Length: 431
Image 1 (spheres, rainbow, N blue to C red):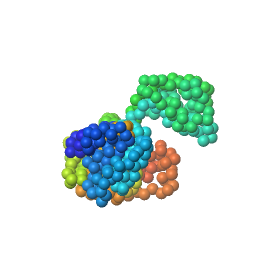
Image 2 (cartoon, rainbow, N blue to C red; image 1 turned 30 degrees about the vertical axis):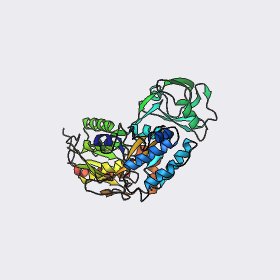
Image 3 (cartoon, rainbow, N blue to C red; image 1 turned 180 degrees about the vertical axis):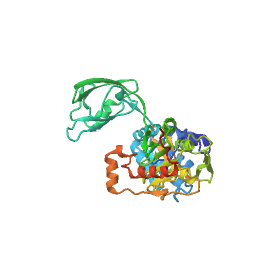
Image 4 (cartoon, helix red, strand yellow; image 1 turned 90 degrees about the vertical axis):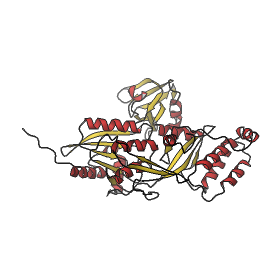
């Protein structure tokens, strides 16, 4: 993406989550000033300072820069001497803080890599989550990830990691163990594991790119009906294709209705939320975005819905940004019943930029509005059916995630009763 006015590239790099990034890399404009000045900047930490300033100057949603003299800020930043990248990073963060926008933020190289990996929906490694067992103080496998080298090799939750490439793990932190296990795709790592019913044994794993599952689904039998339950955890770059597969497979299994669970979903990529909305809606507006110049982009359904079966959507106060785009579109178009508690209330769009030293920048570029023209900033979306869980109910669901999407889950139970009321009575079996 070279500019915000390029609609397609802007769509591919925009995101709706304060904690999310995008895999797209944006080309940057040349620094302002003479060739001599540019050469000097390229040889110093000031290069990053100037890159950040220019991106914000070009794209930030508030043309007044929070009533700040942004040109004077550039002069001040470039008149300083920086002896390290960390000093430049600190100066950039101080300048950005004056915008009073938590979503316009600087990311050091490690943060940028983590965030782009998150939203890409992929990671490289062997696919295991680790913990330091609080009782044994031994590095232990919490779970192997789906479609990972670890699960293919038979690694199980509860396996203790005794050694990594012959290096004992006694006294190691989780971070130290993870650093040893990480590595380039295609390389190998040897783990010595201990399992209570097997003793110690070795496995050799080849590191690979692993697609993370953002979508989980199942069929529930409810009062003689099949209900397709889909949980969407984030709007990553693989979320739409995974959602399509889930809807199609559940439809093939003759479900009568759907429950889409967006609780705890913090958001993600803009194009993923639009693509997923189009899977549920044949017609109607999805979202409108408006930049600092008042230029608006309207996104609509395009007659590509996969199903028109009854739908209930579960939300809570951690359903944010892209989750609010999707639930807002489904609500305003009368396509779904929204159930749960008030959503987070984030109505801003960010783009993500890779900087020349591997660091990054997220910058707010637009506001968005639901199809009915509602600005949900700091208000969120009010569900059609409000259910505020008690502290005990929240603790129960948090301590046993398997209860989500069952009758022990109050929001799911209400969704089922709502959907059953929309369906004709199930046909009686005949002999």
